[in-house]
Image (cartoon, rainbow, N blue to C red):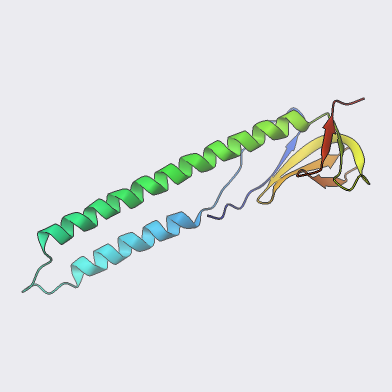
Length: 135
């Protein structure tokens, strides 16, 4: 699943993120396929009732999966925002040790968190990054 998010979170501010999911497109495609199948069936040989019930069950499962994925996306975004809030005002050192500074804001991108230092330098938060209380 692909989630495209880019939000800047300044110190002390609340912000919301927007997400786009390809799952919704798959859900719409499934509905269109089911409706097209029902419209184009041979009236002299209608769909077997067991097949119809099976398709409706599949439709229900797809709908529940889409809703579950949407809720999981919201939980993941909330978790990332909590982590972002905890970084603001702290001292951060990049994985290569070349960049150090105090975090002024945090960007939440599809690739993960990006700390923006007071001088405007961006440091991707990932493995090897050192975070300490501000001096």
